[in-house]
Structures are given as C-alpha cells and as structure tokens.
Image (cartoon, rainbow, N blue to C red; front, side, top):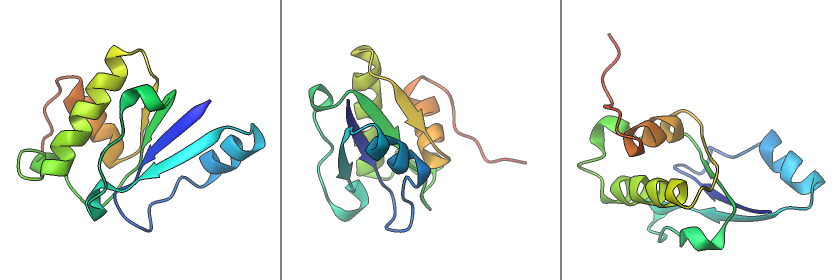
Length: 105
C-alpha cells in the first residue's frame, strides 16, 4: 500500500500511524503544502492521510494550498481512495464532501 500524508506543520506528525505503516511495510510519502510543496497526483497513492495543523477550515477560500487540498481529497474520493483526516484534516474532508465549516459556539 502506498500512503500519502499531507502535513500542515512541522510538529504535526503521524505518530502511531507511521509505526503501523512501517510494521506492514507500506510505502510512505509526505507532502507539506504549507511549505510550498505541490499536492500529489491521486493516482500515486492508495491511502490519503490528512493531518492537523494550526490553519483553519474557515479560511479555505483565503489560503490557496487549502483549496488545492480540498480538491485533492475530492479527487481521491472519486477514485475510491480511503481518506483519513485528523483535526484540520477532518475539517477539510468535511468541506470536500460539501459540509460547511463553522466557528464553534
């Protein structure tokens, strides 16, 4: 299995998921759009993991790389690629599926 991680900060790492991937000898690639890296082609991975970060899903319209990530998630879902999101990643997954991000009361 080819796992693609999307990172949003240098301190937000996949931790035990990476341990699981290594134990199963899955290949792993990391993308850091916040640092200017291009999002990958969805044909290049079998599992997309979108990590958390300090950014906000409320600002997707203002941050171009978050817009690109939402498009990547949509493309992955269309290809029936599993997508797992943590914190910000879960919010971006919701946006990709048509949900509205809102400020919590």
